[in-house]
Image 1 (spheres, rainbow, N blue to C red):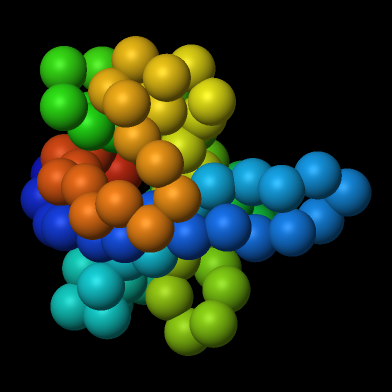
Image 2: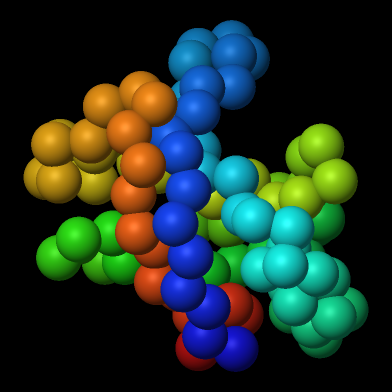
Amino acid sequence: MELEFVGEVVEWRGPAPFHFVRLPLDAAELVDEVKADVVYWGVVPVRARIGTTEFTTAMFPREETWFLPVKAAVRRAEGIELDDVVGVRMHVGRD
């Protein structure tokens, strides 16, 4: 499944701060429809693109949606800061 959306970069604090983009609810519902086919260990693997940078990661459910981790290397390459609004294009699932 391919998805495109726009979202704000947010911080989730754990042992260290991490940056994510929350999926809009309509995109989260689409992921929920296919998660049984692609989920492993409670996360959903994705191949994502922000700007010209493509990366692989795994989304996890939080706050009634899915959180897409944005790696530090991606943030540096694209000049992304906390609270920026970014466009995301992603493929859901392994391939």
